[in-house]
Image (cartoon, rainbow, N blue to C red; front, side, top):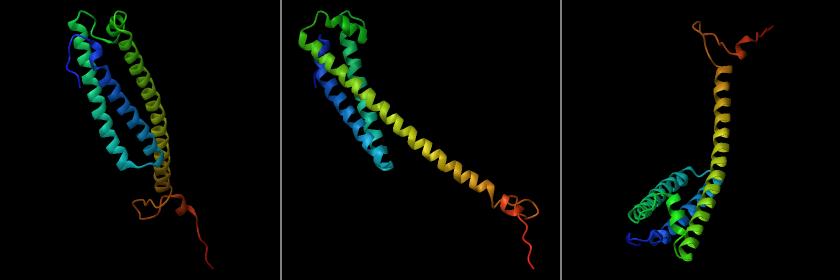
Length: 156
């Protein structure tokens, strides 16, 4: 890991590495969502949170360096700084942005999978809830209040 200096590109390799880690975690998450492995999903969520926190630290460090050398402490400031930077810095920045786009798309896909799981779960809950209301409920007189109680049986 690099120590912050006067070059905003000094930590880009760390940001790229951590972004690739997050992208892989998102791909792993997709596999886990497809398998519906709840325990593994919880573990991956914790790993993703750690990776995101690390990425935020790295970005803040880059922003501080930008501010120190007189640029806006933001991605916009980085774009302005890159105009005067070495081509290698611009390539690293482009690589970082590309990984971020991939991660965003992977996260979108995972969100769709989560939405499908939630819809299935809600449908199952609705069936269970509806089934409970439709039968086997008893009124104050001890008689069934559901549809099953409305049929009369004639014997004999």
